[in-house]
Length: 276
Image 1 (cartoon, rainbow, N blue to C red):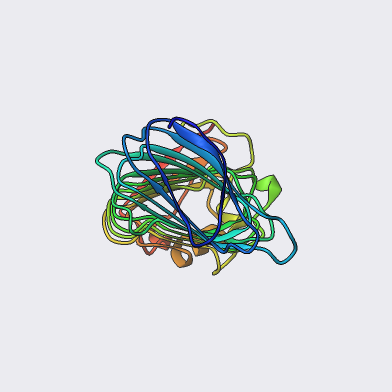
Image 2 (image 1 turned 90 degrees about the vertical axis):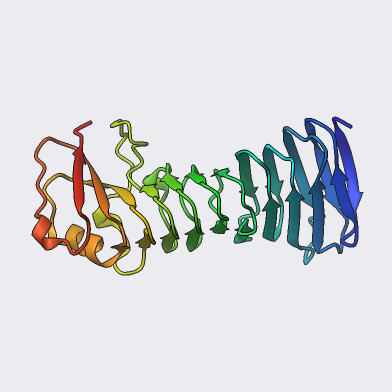
């Protein structure tokens, strides 16, 4: 059918959704620890909430989502510590993910997926995001990072954008591994269009020798934010915490830009963008 009303599941049941524009609410009974959701048929859009009994000590450990037909999925999870996603379709898939219990550092594992995943999240408490072998795009739109955050995009020409407001803070350590492919990551919060509201991640705000960005194999580009004339701390971050990138794009807040390429151990192309 086209609408799934509230359905109660125990942990040993599998919910199979068929049809087009499937949406609704799924409620896991008390004591259930695993939710199995299968999307089948000609599913072109899905949006539903996955709830868990909120009784004390009652937690949903794992959510398994599989599909060979899905085009878009908005999945809101409550109390789930692990979300496993296995998606294999011919085209790109829009995947909106949220773990809305601040006490749960959720792991989103889509390593088995071969489709091009367009992943977006606006939640601070997703702690690990793993994508598969497609050309994936990750838009991190939360107000910050509440936990240690690890992103691995594996093979493919991937894009990662951090679009959050640094006024809200990064409480944990951020590590990104882009894997094989010609990848791009933007930590400047400028979205590449030169506009900026003053809340991006300056190189000097990195946690020294903790925050770590690895471009992996391929021709990779990272966009960072600088005050203009680079200082020692910025060179240290570019040499110690940003590795395996061939191209460096620097967003600056003024027209007085200066970088000494001889002080950089990596990069074969450097581009300045700005001022905004």
